[in-house]
Length: 266
Image 1: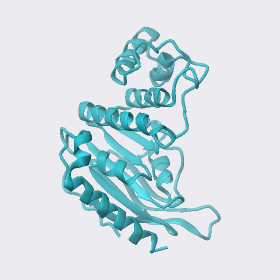
Image 2: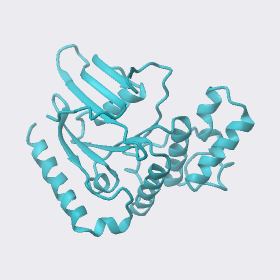
Image 3: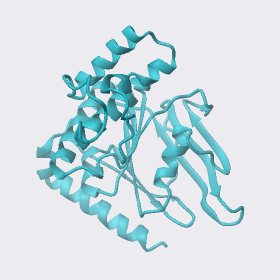
Image 4: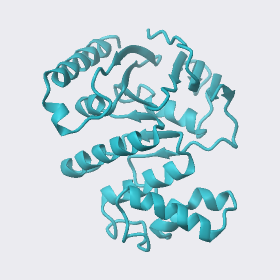
């Protein structure tokens, strides 16, 4: 079991004694705690690993407000989560609205807030440029008009504009080809360094988890809870050369061994 200890920094996301049952008898998640603190001038990049079906995506859905636990508390910035708190989520499946342009998709949250079209288009263009989509803003956000990688760039830009403090990502690069996936990993690191958000990232790729993450949390299933925490002791600024270092390889092996150990827990 991972013991989450408050170190004195501001709490960004906290789950307290969370349990989930769908039939009133068997608990899928039971007594789960999770704490993500802010790291000033850096933010936090937490990666969640675990076997399929252990509840990784459910954790993100709790934070995003897409699902309520059977019991327990979800806190954002030390306050109980309420429906008016917007926390966006990037899914593996393309989530842009295909009947709208890239520009309108990225600015969607501002539209709901009543921001004028002129202002939201200006702000949306800032983020479109940041994710490398300038020149595509008037295209419809659909495949094959845009590639898979471009559609995920739209989703990331939309999420950051909606709430630059918290970014939830559920296997966002899982459907991409390897070259595009590597490009998207580097883009995400660039955005993390620029905005210092709190990112919670779910993946099945151990190398990706080590390359991107600040801390890795591994879940067991039946009932789900966090049982392993591995701090990624790599430089804050990383690039492809980081993957060639002995430290990186050692961390990948450590996480791999931990995953095998957790799988044996049942």
